[in-house]
Image (cartoon, rainbow, N blue to C red):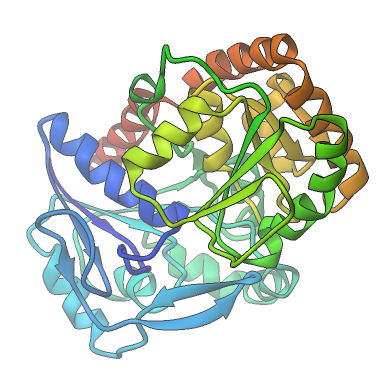
Length: 345
């Protein structure tokens, strides 16, 4: 099949949707399909077809790198015209996502990723009739999790195809560093880094050898035992996860899946995470959950994991096994089935 995979976001910017689009193009190619990405900006894998410049707009307690160029509808239509199937991620996000619904294109598969904020959910309820009419142009709708599925249930029925990764590529036989904790996330309030940093001195008082490695965020200083690594490449990130005993995901909300959690699980990290529905759906009984925003509870859970290598190792092995549900083979099978259904509809 010839498959155009559309992202409304700049693929050169960090983000879960972008990661999945880039990975999916690669997995489809490995599976023998001809696939290419379509996105604003100038980043992406070889063969990406770019459709407009990027502006950064606030959304869901974050910022989204999207295009607002009115010409994008025409450009997206041209970029996908030779595909058998168009797979658009976040089809309601302007303007590249919406362009797939507005333009005359080959059969469409749409994937909904977000756990939208309260005001967006109100818009969904108020505009459900219009949204139902617009999304009717999707031959097949998918959502990355039950949380994302529920968010759009008022206007479309979506099947769940989870986000995923190459689980085998993240396995490591190397030794874990006792007491090493890793955090991965942008420096945004909803990622919960400030809660983790507030908890960290308490962790260190109980486990003096504990160390915290912060990826994707750069700050000039922090509490003792904290190292800020900033944005790193994929190989460096995998190496950090392979060495860490614990992954901490202290997010405060707005998460529909939790790919970072799965990355930690696949690397055999014990997981300590906020009790968000999305994280619970991903990690289940293999993780320790604490109340979102509760630094005292977070400190206690981290101290227990960081201070006992045997407990962390057992939790990490359980997490590694649970991660198999999100292997690339599962995701690819789900999406190729959706493409075939779209072609047959």
